Image (cartoon, rainbow, N blue to C red):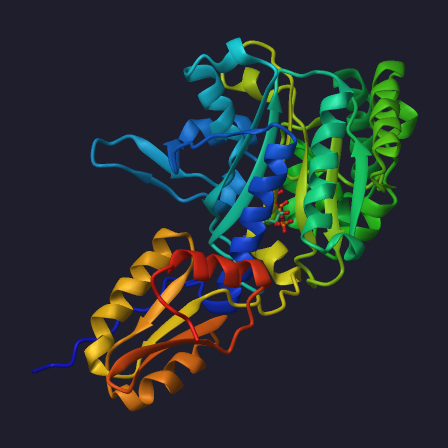
Length: 415
Ligand code: ATP
Ligand code: MG
């Protein structure tokens, strides 16, 4: 019979296990705890949307829409796209579910997102994001709250020291128009030196040349005019209010006048939390204000601000010490007590204590097998003078956990 070939994992996807999974889970747990402190409600949205949801809001000429989306016709012939990010789907839900009535609305979500990119360390085709958004709040205080949430998250993950908040403003519509004209003039003057991708950007969205990763573009991007000279008084006041709020909240930031975001929908505040610890994949968390997004989906003018962070990139920065085990191993060293062991682990688990029974294989080897799992304590059941002797040993549990074990098993005399 022909040997069946094992299928490969699809390029750019991941199987996450062991310490990698524990770090991954810690990012998600910490995010869930911190977002509650800031009163952000959790939402779940679909993994796929009508393609136009992303195409219209993110912008047809962005890398995400032009090259990175997983788009396919479904069996009914509709064009669907696996979400490459959360913001557009949340904005779509805001409109289709009538969530305007709850504005201002603070939302958080997390899960898998999909982008057809060249896989490398910290860059996958299916990766995971945590995401926080505030819809319907035009005030700079909303930007400050989101950035403070991001800052606290990084602190609680223990990685704030190696990560810097870079902040910029992209101004309001009037500012952008004036700045855009200045950028076009600058880039036109250096047309010959620009990469092919940037020549295309020059026609459609010249600001994005500033974001180019092509070394050919960098000198021209770096010598482009800053937005500052073009800021309207309103746009300047907005940015000043954001930075004053950050200072008041104790959030450190750095101005990066070169920072623009890859997606079309940003206005005013744009930011990235960056580190030099992840090589080329140094942006761990990014976002900004997107007051035009909901309108691009056919909704009313709606303010919005938000960010997303790569769970894998955050997880790679964590230094997680092996957590002290709290598992109680119950070992029957005599087959006559196997059912007692089963009963004891059931009682421990019902009392909220993690427990594992060792009741299979050679009774002599069970204790060694239990120790290999590095339990927080073992309860061994052995025969002495024809009676059962239960002893609690190898205790690495805190005192209150030992008390909890004893309370869960009141009928057992633990030697
Ligand atoms: P990059 O410049 O690294 O491509 P981006 O600007 O495309 O990032 P965003 O769209 O802002 O990224 O997504 C928010 C966050 O999601 C990023 O800061 C990063 O942490 C993470 N991220 C983006 N693309 C990937 C990917 N392909 N694999 C893993 N994480 C990613
Ligand atoms: Mg990208």
